[in-house]
Structures are given as structure tokens and as C-alpha cells.
Image (tube, rainbow, N blue to C red; front, side):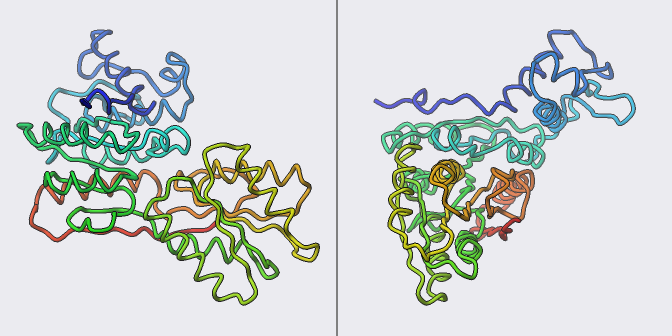
Length: 354
């Protein structure tokens, strides 16, 4: 039988570091008002980057464990200064492969979530296959029996997971696109249709005649909306040919798909135009095209808030990862405060850069 252990996952590095730093307060016997590690000291002691150390200290401050003072630096906070708000705990579920390969639930989202829910405990669980449904149902039942309010975040979740959360009636936010027939959950996602349309237009430019779209092997509802946007852009350009390929998470396979497309192009086609659903796909395609000596223009959907390559056209949410996390926390708080309210839907606008 599946068990809760099957869903257990190590939390993101920023949370692991925040937990380790918080443990240092007790280990060192520090009292309220006493000086704590600065960003530089934490980075050096735990051998991490300054950026990671700074975000971990942000989380500690949001938990109410420390105060960050401008002149004196971090000090240990007085007990009881944290405010757990409406929720005591939030359980976050995300596909393990997406967290590892694509950086889903990056540090900024976690920092923003903790900022919106200061003092709230955040737990993380990896989902792997549909066989996890039984374990997920068991865990949601346990969360529903908790004495204190508990919220749930489902990132890139399956139909089974969304239905289970809907049936349990726990305060839940879907971080991604709702599955068909799921109507009672709150949701936040970026405008997938707009991202696809803008990337297709920019990648084709004025002379592009063939567009290759690389999607991940596992198809989500957001992918369908993304492709709908690409289709609308192509429909507005008579004479443009659209090819769509689903790619396994394997760089060699992606390179073979791209090479086959390039070899089928005529000499007068101009640049190779590609739109990729994820950064790993775009990077594999870029390496292949560079090796073939082809002129190319690559557009990629990237919600991580970083520039994956100077040569890419990048579609991303206009909201920062921190703001995305804050909005997830705000949706959870609103749902706890008014469980009978209609489901809330947030569609974040999209930017394409450069």
C-alpha cells in the first residue's frame, strides 16, 4: 500500500538553509536581542552563495525568529513576535522531475509565500506518478483532521490530485492550470495563451516560414493553452508551416528532433524558428543548432525569473517569483477567511524579453 513516506521530499535548499540557521539560535544559546549571523557570515559558514544566504535570512525574519536591522544587522527576535496568521501549516505538492529539471518552486516563490504567511510552517512533498494518488489522499485526510488550519498548494498537479483536494474541501491553491471538470479550487497561473502567441510572433519575425514547437513529453492543460496561442499567431500569417513535437527529457533525443527539422528546410527558409516549452528543451536545441551552423531564433517559456541564455526570447510572468508566492499565500488566507466565496482565479500578464 502507498504511504505518506512515498510522497516525502527534501524541501528546497533555501528552506533547508533557513532551518539550519534557525537551529543555530538554539545551538549557540542566543537570547532575544543578541546579534545573529549576517548574510556574509552565513554564506561563509554554510558554504553557500550570498543570494541563497540572504533569502534564507529573509525567511527567518518572516518566521519571526530574527529581526533584520539596518545598522546593527540581524538580532534574535523576542518570542511571540511571529504571527502565523490564519494558517498554521501549508503543504506544498510538486512533481519531483519539474523541481529538479526545471527549477519549479524556486527560492523566490518560497520567500514570497513565507512573507504572506509569516510564522507558518511550510512542508514539501514530491509527486512522481499517478500511483501516488492513494498516498496523496491519505495525507490530505490527515491534514483535514489537524487541529490547526492547514492549507494546500498543488503545483503542476494531476487531475487526480486536484479532484482529491476538491473533495477534501481543504483551502487549496493550484499553482498552474486547473484540470477539466475541477471547478471549486483557487488558481494562479500566467497567461499561457498570450505567452505562446507572443513567442511565435517574435520568433518568426518578418521572414520566418516554418515554426518548430518543442513540448515536454508530459502534457499539461497549460501546454494546450500555450499551443492555442501559437496556433492563433500562425493563423494570422498565411504560408507559415507549424510543426509540434513532444520531447522526452533527453538532450540527445531533442537534438535529433531539431536536426531532422533543419535538414528538411529549404535553402530559402531563412532562420530556424523554434518555440520551446521549457529552458532545458531550449538549451538542448541551441547546442544542436550551433553545431549545425544554422541561423536560428529561439523563444522559450520560463517562469523562473532568470535569463537562461542571452540569445533567447524569453516569455515570463510579469510578476516576480516573490510576488507569485505572496499571491499564493494571500489566496490561501482569503479562502480560510471565507470558505463559501466563489473560486478565485489569477491570470498573471506575460512579458517577452528582450
